[in-house]
Length: 572
Image (tube, rainbow, N blue to C red; front, side):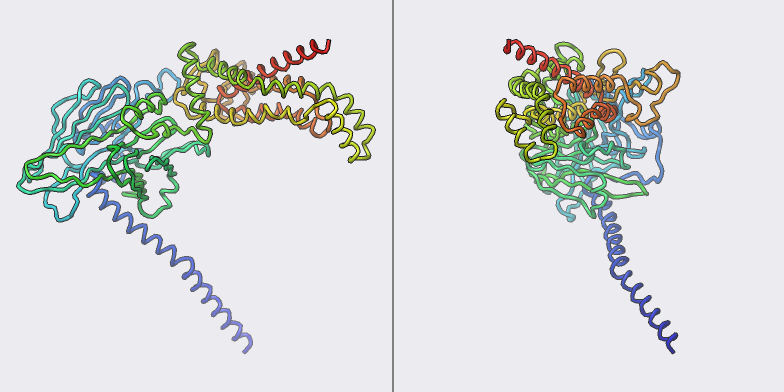
């Protein structure tokens, strides 16, 4: 009986555990999955009806050449961009930069921004209209619509007008133009040739297929971005994937798009219009889709009347001077926020402009970094002067400090009292030497940000082997800096140390020799290993940042030597 009772109890407990697991874990999971499936269906319907985005119903991918040859196209040819617009669906789905390559190799491909949706990593934008009410009985253009055009090419001197008329006689037009840089202007016009009034809302969107490879750095945002009522919104791809349903914002004006490290695609509505912006993720035919779109206000078009609105599309490199220019030209708020300047915006942006100024004079961003370093040193010289004077006095006090430490080595309280008394008599602040380091921290991070995110330094050369200041020193100690016939770059850069990180370590060691040595032996050993530690740490960093650190150390040493000589002169 006892064995049967235990068996019955085990069965009951097993059932309770199974039911509990089903109730607390499986049921919420199934509910969430059902909501996700429902959302995907709603998204596809909403996308089809509201965003002019009837995606190609193919499971696999086409190669780029076949995708571009699939439909009739009109060319885009401007000083900085080349590509085409598909007449089917009127999509901006073929854009390549003329001035930026993927690598420094002579045979490197140009960087491509937009690609057709049927290719892997498809990325495109288009503009359209939606009905205000489902009771409206007229057709709208969608991604299957074949538009006609009055031109064969769009250039910075020649726009193109695209037209399509529905079965009810309503004519839709888009006049597309581009300037000499990366800004497209899209004028949407609707001519109501019917006997009834119609109501429409303009829509625009950017769509991206597949999750792009990102650097994954916490100091850099890559993904959906926008300015909503003057507030910067940054959403990660993974956050959109987790979210069920679109994330919506109401905004007056602003801009909404997707950013990569150096490139930006963003929709810019009329800055006086109220819009609803959406950011969403969904899947279709086993493909991951990210979409950024906005819907404008209702536009009433009386019978035999027309209405025209203007939108902007920025599809290009995040060049700071260009973004600032557009910000003023089109009254676009905080367009420069598309560059991830970070917390030290008040330093990073001015530093970047100073680098650009020096580069315009000397034609080399490496020289610009050195001059910026010198300028920073000159600005903080009065503060550094006081600090270095205190450090020099501390160095002169070392013999006395050692005697005090020896005399009172068994009495910590008396030792501290005597040391404080010595500092007071000699008017020395032992913490003053740390001040320049504290000041350098935000400066260091600000410059690191610039070198990391600024397109201006992308593939910018210095001299000799440094051909790109935005990446790590390409040389390696492991092949004796090119003397041995093999390439060790498959190894992590933290052990694959280049010439400039070694120079930085040596300069840091030399600078330490000018400073007073810590009286505590443990601290002395830590300080002794710091140059080695920083050599390894900075090895993977942008070579421009390492060059800054080297010259910062050299200028600091020069300051210390000058101050020391002046103090010796004053004593005589």
